[in-house]
Length: 285
Image (tube, rainbow, N blue to C red; front, side, top):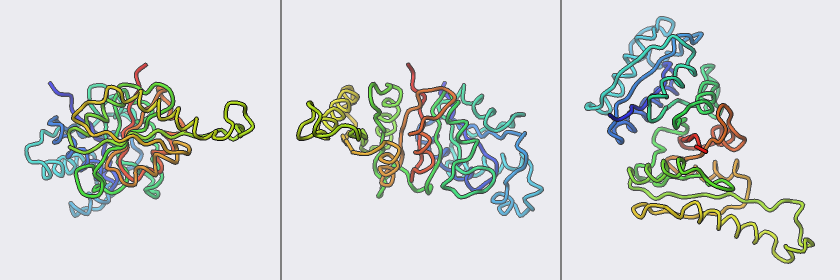
């Protein structure tokens, strides 16, 4: 039996966009969709759904939000199997628990406070840090997907040292399903204390660091499947700036998370600044 995709909803515009993305993804993967609502949220942000139902947002109930979200998903994909669940817990804990029996968790990027979309909500941040399965934080417009048009590639960030097979496996799989190329990006920097006076770096210090990055990139991709077109990109600069820049022309950005319960500086920056949906994949050691 295929594990379902889980999407968290609260009735906000951001969570509705996540439902759309999740419905498309579940249909693409041919798996069921589970829509989850945590009942201990202090207040509901149901303004978008309230307008749809013609009711004041203050009267929105968890059941209303779940029904409307499920209906929205089925309207996009009539054959999609959609179920709903109300969980008596805080949203982040409800989603992390649901993710233990899921292939992926999808959440919106905006916090419940309704702040600017460029800021990452606490629920999204916590789920991405704690989940045992990959988490998609839906950023950018919903059209920013690797399904054709301008955003016709997937980007995967390749870190220094060994890159987890789980990160690459997901990136290869998503590119294969969408029939789009995969851009593997390895950011590199020449430390400021390394100068041309260094005995090993006389003449071209930066070139040696770039060559090392290129070798690490090739090593990471040595088992790339033949049915996916893979581009190699070594780009000078910090990964927390290079990867968001690469997301501008991507439909999906895939990164790893090495420490359970904490987002590193790169993941934190990417989730705040990416122009497209971001998949955070727990790296298995």
